[in-house]
Length: 378
Image (cartoon, rainbow, N blue to C red; front, side, top):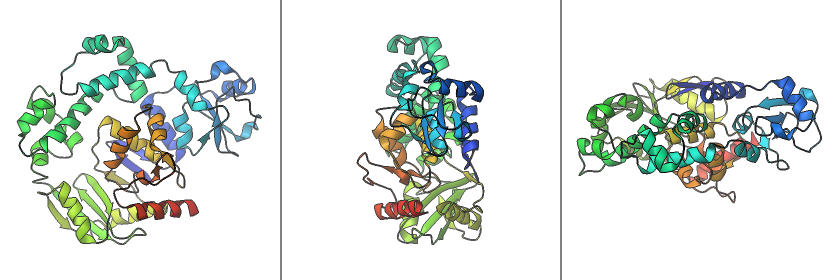
């Protein structure tokens, strides 16, 4: 089963997830022979370079972990804790391997400081040397470390923040498209329109007009969680949601796209409905879908992390924030999860409060509870 999000292919198999992450983040490969010798020697100098995972216990550790050594045939190696988690392993409580990986990256705190500065000055055209002077981080460190730590370049991150601000401003009734463009920090309208279809899902004027000129096809079907709607533009699926009936589902779609031409076409979207229902039960017949999802760089990182939560398990907001390299940003993670338009496909229902409470879910707490129980029992 394979998904395409923002032009990137992702598969449901752990190995493919690890390969995709390895390609995206350009992490160093792990040489199994050398790594195993370091594990046998409990080499503390190897802490932070990789983690090893034990298939029989489903736990991953740092190389110097004092626990009893497993058999070689049951051990796998991962460059990052995120990859180990994506493969279904959980962190060792004895050696806390994730803390070792965080300490091993001296640039993490610096890059987070730069990201905070760019977010706070999203409406300004900042130069690299100005950012360096304001944050105390060397320009070379910003250029090399930013993409490695956050997965995007400083320029891409800054543009994503400006785009997010534009989206908020353009929806205000008294603000024109031109005003929103300049208020968000774009030097001209051409700067925004370049590639806007990839970041907005429609032209800025169409977004301002509530989706005017867009045709959205939708289908309503029964599911294990009650009535479900799958909606799509010409580019792919743009919304998956649940409600009590078609009227409620259509009202939610129209709230987001009040001027779009919404047409019910159950037969044309049968393939999409079957695929989403397949996701509810990990049906092998679930087919590839092109998700028409537009997100900021931070939202995309959060949604990727959600896709890595194994079926039948949950994570807290703080754990997701830590996993994507934004420790202490649990509230921001919650906001990104709240904007997820693809129920089930991006499993935001697997995130709970620190005390295990269900917190909230756009499609209802009772559905969230039933869905988690269904996954655990399976």
